[in-house]
Image 1 (spheres, rainbow, N blue to C red):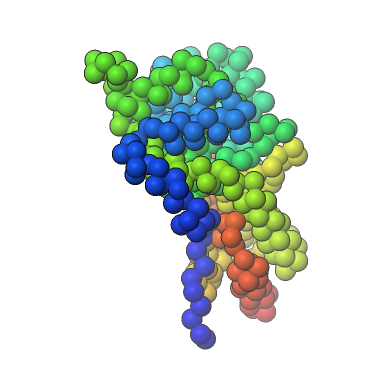
Image 2: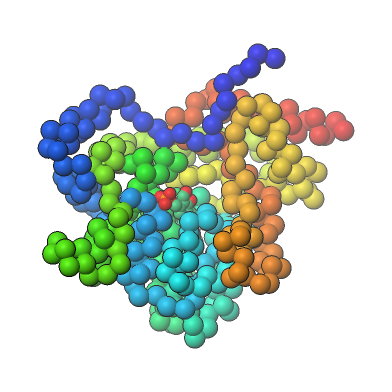
Length: 377
Ligand SMILES: Cc1ncc(COP(=O)(O)O)c(C=O)c1O
């Protein structure tokens, strides 16, 4: 068989160099490589897009979360999902907070609000929920819980720049929402993050905190980070923001096409549920392979795709409570049955705005080949 080019799981959708050149030129001419005009413009425009008072650009989502946890003065325990990316809870460890892992909803894969309520103790200071693959956590139930128990509410919105809930953009909820602008995300700056908040004091804390905790006096106020967004990154982000509506449209159309075509081959195939009133970024298109129903495993499908040069990812496997960094914080490994099950059985398919019809048909044809080979046996 002629070897085909490997189809990546994702790629940033970039424009020709000429689109960036005037912005890059401005930066080079100014000699200001960090926290200058492009960063300020990026913060202004992202805040306007989201409908939130403040956006503060950082070097990453992880750094943004670290500063938000510190700025909100969290203490003791923070309830987080285990089915999320490793970096969702690393900021807790950096702030000497204890992650308390909650299970997830089996359809949306977002944190199970009923379990969250059961896990709240006198030591709990916050809930940190992830909008998984772009699908928002149950914001209204979590907000009600946070209000009732006087907890801070933070969203790891790494996947969700451009997701909406009831017509509102993700970014306006909770005490803060923190986005990632790494290359795999809907809005990219290369690497980077955005802290979105309506809390002026928190925004100011993050602004100082990304710059060592220095208010300009050199008399450092608190233990900050070196976590600024470079100007050239913000320039890439400004272009990415401009192209976001068109790129989201293409991602959603690609997800629809892949879902419908794969379900034609395997009618009982499930994908992550997009709840009513939600528009997702499809940071990932995640398919659920229930081996007891389908007769084959997620791992077998992953390996088959790989043998045909199609990259897929086992997100999020292992879940956090199985990772060495977090093990000390979770002694009862059987307490998260949905997380355990979902982590073993879901697979993220290639997804990006410039995924072509040819690419998608290659994925579909390969899936068909895989399914039919198993049905014959
Ligand atoms: C859910 C989630 N949170 C946090 C991060 C960390 O983002 P960053 O690389 O910008 O720190 C990622 C990265 O992919 C992620 O998927």
